[in-house]
Length: 191
Ligand SMILES: Nc1ncnc2c1ncn2[C@@H]1O[C@H](COP(=O)(O)OP(=O)(O)OP(=O)(O)O)[C@@H](O)[C@H]1O
Image (cartoon, rainbow, N blue to C red; front, side):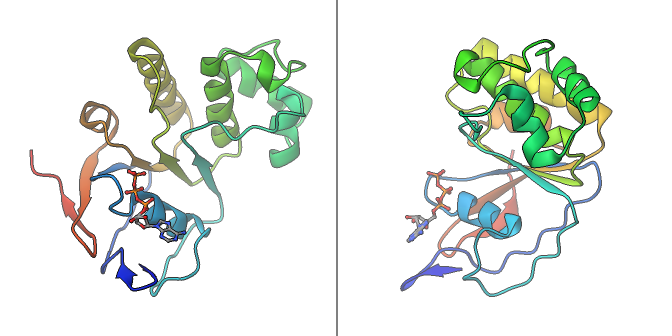
């Protein structure tokens, strides 16, 4: 993958097994987000091949909610969930009864929980998360990680998590890889 004259990503080979959580760490600007965008199918200017499953969900750093739609609609429109399924999805993330609220009426933590609910409610085979818990205070970050762990236990999914927080990677991931160099390569993280 190159931007102009600059080759950002080198030759990368990664397989994500069912139920596995891989964390990718690496310095700022090395190409982590670019790599995720390629895997998500959002970036086309690369040489290579990505084989992805039918159902893929993404969670970004900032919740990407439709602010002009209710909480329930945020689940219904993108995923086609029934009212009963919406109730279950909201209940699972501690947002029972908040379906008629608008995203701006939710706290930051609640908005992030809704983002996670939306990601899992589509029953994805692969979940891509790019710094999903960044810029949260320690308590909220811990709460979100616990929620993610619970959702992952209930819904089998393979997860690729980009994070610069090593404790987060160590807590959540079965494997930690480091993206480094220019062009960037993937290597197992040295402890
Ligand atoms: N659309 C673009 N056009 C040109 N250069 C880009 C574009 N997107 C990213 N880059 C460059 O590619 C490199 C990798 O960017 P990327 O956002 O993937 O890094 P990152 O590892 O995710 O960084 P961070 O940890 O700071 O988010 C950077 O040098 C960036 O400036």
